[in-house]
Length: 443
Image (cartoon, rainbow, N blue to C red; front, side):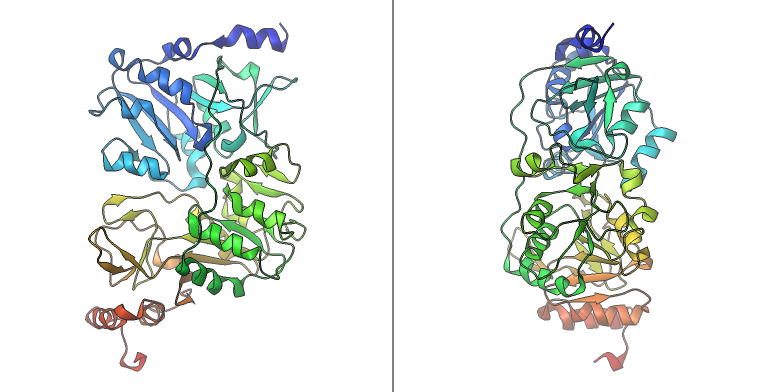
């Protein structure tokens, strides 16, 4: 049987393919634009036939029909490794459960501890050699597929083919069923317009970035704004090593800043694990020899990141307390996103020769009632700690950048209060005094 015959023998409709799923199964959807929308819809239509089907996904942009169709969660229980804005809204409705993780560990979790009865995800059309490219989900997809009892691929004609170092493809011989069908164009996520505070924060970071630096720009608007502002700087020969490739990297390439020439690991290659952004970005990464998609257990490993001299990791956070603990995934008990690769890159960048890791936030936020709150707080009350105080480096607001590495508790309090919004500094000093982490000399 040749590969075309094998492909045809495994071809099913979405409705036929999901018949293999049984009550109690664990089903995996992969990540971002590789979420299998046709198979998800077909599975949701089987709601009344199934009980207790557990689904894992992450960064799904919605709708996840299996979650939406079952508000009691008796039939489908959706879980996410890292919440998109859509999945955050599912969490608010009680329709999504977060799975704590560090991104470099996700595939090892599957390999050593987790059950996957059925894995189904979107891939590119098959090539002449019988391979499907795992595209924008290559960072985690192969490890999940390898663990699955049954593999169902949904061919999405819009996905880019992204070259890789290893594990970026799967062969038709490793697949149980293939599903085809028309798809809407891929969702787009262009860089948002920066706020005044975003620009001020970026201006605090730029002096620390040197020619030839390798960049990791985390998920969220602010890191991408920093990337876009780097386009207007005098910096040259920047590199890319990141879990997520977004539009900022394309903008840096277009501006002549991103060459990858000075990288000490994979020189000439921009390395990533996942991709999502605008159509322009998808077109740029498609069969581009400059881009390599590799598994996140390798890309995000601290020892891999540390191989890059002058590594600069730039990530969002939600709040920091006076001890230097960083929360980047919850607001109190409300789940927002996830740990993702933030701890991976902070650790790896700190190990890099000349490396720096930045946790960025605006100094304040305004709640639904219009009240302004400081993001630098005396101490946390229920917020999930993403970065322990023992691993802090640079904390950045529009009022400055401070490096907490190696600093005592009173030094941290002094430094963090110096970059808090001026309206909250006196109050924070009083709280620091109560907590006995303030010296009179600090005044």
